[in-house]
Image (cartoon, rainbow over all chains, first blue to last red; front, side, top):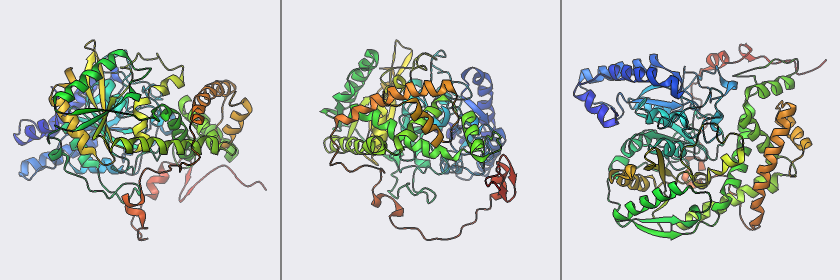
Length: 477
Length: 100
């Protein structure tokens, strides 16, 4: 059976199941399925059962339960968890045990959630298929010869396979939304600044965001509610008030104007995906939304811009892996030799490629031509969004131009892999919130995701639309 | 060709990253193709565009003004040092840096 947050609360309140029994049940499911899927990298039963017992004591005492009481969750392995190995899918952090929790993790646990373990991902969240993990790829639970998407492939797979009720992923250029689409579950990134990044091991700091996967939009909203809001430990987390999403999502969507950017329905879009998204737009129309043709003229430049900015920031952030304070060290008689050997041995191919590219675009003589140019085009892309939101309430696009592809099918050509991020990177660069919601399956097998972008801090609006879409049967279009 | 083998060697040196001969050539070719693709940005006139370095405007963060400088307890030094490959509390030990 598929558990939801409401289901867990009702089960606990009616004493049909204890939090400990539920936790044990999930570990049993994981034991059965994880060897095949490779979605969990580490399990944390001691911490999980301790939390479950706390919840059971609350139930026994009759005290009110926190909003996520007993809900089994999984955490992407780029988020720091005190006492639980956190590898970022990399050899360089293979045995790293953080001394503190990420704020999002603290908040989940503080709301009663039970942390089952850490999920596999592309190394340092760099990838779109989960095939860049040093610990092997994750398999898509919907079709195990296919990728789950990436980089948060493990977090998407565990929820889709019923090995967690919800999970946290991170999204830098699409790494929550795209695996959500490919695994057939709702997945969301809030606005940049909505969720504290404290304890998120950095890839590209001006783009990285933490967000939820769950089996339904209501649960996505509940997880976002828990992790959102100002945190003094992240100076980019905003003071903007956080609405009560549970109240917002069931508000009517009738009369909402939804922008359809024709620039997103161009070359490279799989015809099966296109067909489902068009049916999805029809469904939104039936719900009373008004489609509006819009232009986002800089869309075609988004991938180029993204791969300048993301790699530049990555090359700088990943300078910290030097074999001195944590992680792998490869010995050498000289300090610089130790740095070089450690980094050469510890990083995988995609990470090295991005460090080289990122260092190059920042280096003397190339900074203006690449990095500065990228920052300027980023401003134009953000401007496209601001202008669009003067005319529409939300923007509707496909999440990914293709459904889940076969494992190994695309690994040889990095540029081709990058180009598939076209629909997600735009919103990443602009800083706006985005959600992917299931929109039917191609041939009844491969899930398609419909993506909704809202204006900055307009999470409520896209949650509302996604919820209405889901309730109207969007997943089985 | 956008990037030469020498460029890759120079950049790998800047990034303190050991690359094998075969890695050098593979990455050079792949990055060359990526840079070729990136050059499409030159189609855009950005002479009068301000670069965007950050998403949020000052009024959206609490740190538009600096916070007070107050000492808060931390006390995780021992745990942090436990993660080091070669700790010598309270220090991290590294290969000799200064030649005599």
